[in-house]
Image: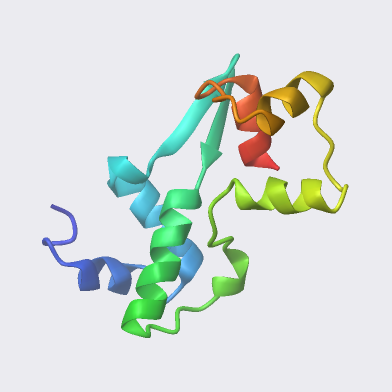
Length: 117
Protein backbone atom coordinates (compact mmCIF):
# COMPACT_ATOMS: atom_id res chain seq x y z
CA UNK A 1 0.00 0.00 0.00
CA UNK A 2 1.08 3.55 -0.53
CA UNK A 3 1.78 4.17 3.17
CA UNK A 4 3.60 0.89 3.84
CA UNK A 5 0.91 -0.12 6.32
CA UNK A 6 1.96 2.68 8.64
CA UNK A 7 -0.42 5.25 10.11
CA UNK A 8 2.61 7.36 10.99
CA UNK A 9 3.67 7.38 7.32
CA UNK A 10 0.22 8.65 6.39
CA UNK A 11 0.49 11.40 8.99
CA UNK A 12 4.00 12.24 7.80
CA UNK A 13 2.75 12.63 4.20
CA UNK A 14 0.26 15.22 5.42
CA UNK A 15 3.21 17.39 6.52
CA UNK A 16 1.58 18.06 9.87
CA UNK A 17 -1.46 19.69 8.25
CA UNK A 18 -4.89 18.52 9.35
CA UNK A 19 -6.74 19.45 6.12
CA UNK A 20 -4.18 17.57 4.01
CA UNK A 21 -4.50 14.54 6.27
CA UNK A 22 -8.29 14.66 5.77
CA UNK A 23 -7.78 14.72 1.99
CA UNK A 24 -5.36 11.79 2.07
CA UNK A 25 -7.69 9.72 4.23
CA UNK A 26 -10.69 10.49 2.03
CA UNK A 27 -8.75 9.67 -1.14
CA UNK A 28 -7.10 6.42 -0.02
CA UNK A 29 -9.55 4.79 2.38
CA UNK A 30 -12.99 3.91 0.97
CA UNK A 31 -14.61 3.72 4.41
CA UNK A 32 -14.11 7.48 4.72
CA UNK A 33 -15.53 8.30 1.27
CA UNK A 34 -18.86 9.62 2.45
CA UNK A 35 -20.55 11.00 -0.63
CA UNK A 36 -23.84 10.88 -2.49
CA UNK A 37 -25.48 12.04 -5.68
CA UNK A 38 -28.42 14.41 -5.80
CA UNK A 39 -29.48 14.45 -9.40
CA UNK A 40 -26.32 15.14 -11.37
CA UNK A 41 -24.55 16.77 -8.40
CA UNK A 42 -21.93 14.89 -6.40
CA UNK A 43 -22.13 15.86 -2.74
CA UNK A 44 -19.03 15.09 -0.67
CA UNK A 45 -19.05 15.01 3.11
CA UNK A 46 -15.66 14.94 4.80
CA UNK A 47 -17.09 14.38 8.27
CA UNK A 48 -15.81 10.83 8.80
CA UNK A 49 -12.27 11.81 7.82
CA UNK A 50 -12.42 15.04 9.83
CA UNK A 51 -13.65 13.29 12.96
CA UNK A 52 -10.93 10.67 12.54
CA UNK A 53 -8.23 13.34 12.18
CA UNK A 54 -9.57 15.17 15.25
CA UNK A 55 -9.54 11.96 17.29
CA UNK A 56 -6.05 10.92 16.15
CA UNK A 57 -4.70 14.43 16.71
CA UNK A 58 -6.00 14.42 20.28
CA UNK A 59 -5.08 10.81 21.11
CA UNK A 60 -1.53 11.05 19.78
CA UNK A 61 -1.02 14.69 20.78
CA UNK A 62 0.09 15.50 17.23
CA UNK A 63 -0.68 19.22 17.35
CA UNK A 64 -1.58 19.18 13.66
CA UNK A 65 -1.65 22.56 11.93
CA UNK A 66 -4.91 24.13 10.77
CA UNK A 67 -7.19 22.03 12.98
CA UNK A 68 -9.40 25.11 13.11
CA UNK A 69 -10.29 24.46 9.46
CA UNK A 70 -12.02 21.19 10.37
CA UNK A 71 -15.48 20.59 11.75
CA UNK A 72 -14.76 17.63 13.98
CA UNK A 73 -18.22 16.77 15.18
CA UNK A 74 -21.06 14.67 13.86
CA UNK A 75 -22.92 16.44 11.06
CA UNK A 76 -26.35 16.05 12.67
CA UNK A 77 -25.33 18.27 15.61
CA UNK A 78 -25.03 21.50 13.62
CA UNK A 79 -28.61 21.46 12.32
CA UNK A 80 -29.87 20.46 15.79
CA UNK A 81 -28.21 23.49 17.33
CA UNK A 82 -29.17 25.86 14.50
CA UNK A 83 -32.77 24.70 14.70
CA UNK A 84 -32.82 25.07 18.49
CA UNK A 85 -31.84 28.73 18.13
CA UNK A 86 -34.33 29.29 15.28
CA UNK A 87 -31.53 29.91 12.79
CA UNK A 88 -32.50 26.91 10.67
CA UNK A 89 -36.10 26.19 9.75
CA UNK A 90 -37.31 22.95 8.20
CA UNK A 91 -40.21 22.65 5.79
CA UNK A 92 -43.48 21.64 7.48
CA UNK A 93 -43.16 18.08 6.13
CA UNK A 94 -39.57 17.70 7.31
CA UNK A 95 -40.47 19.22 10.67
CA UNK A 96 -43.12 16.52 11.15
CA UNK A 97 -40.68 13.75 10.17
CA UNK A 98 -37.94 14.98 12.51
CA UNK A 99 -40.22 15.83 15.44
CA UNK A 100 -41.96 12.44 15.34
CA UNK A 101 -38.67 10.56 15.11
CA UNK A 102 -39.38 8.96 11.75
CA UNK A 103 -36.38 7.68 9.86
CA UNK A 104 -35.20 9.89 7.02
CA UNK A 105 -34.28 7.97 3.91
CA UNK A 106 -30.52 7.73 3.37
CA UNK A 107 -29.27 9.92 0.50
CA UNK A 108 -32.66 11.59 0.15
CA UNK A 109 -32.83 15.32 -0.46
CA UNK A 110 -33.98 15.81 3.15
CA UNK A 111 -31.10 13.82 4.59
CA UNK A 112 -28.48 15.55 2.46
CA UNK A 113 -29.95 18.98 3.22
CA UNK A 114 -29.76 18.35 6.95
CA UNK A 115 -26.23 16.96 6.79
CA UNK A 116 -25.05 19.87 4.64
CA UNK A 117 -26.38 22.52 7.04
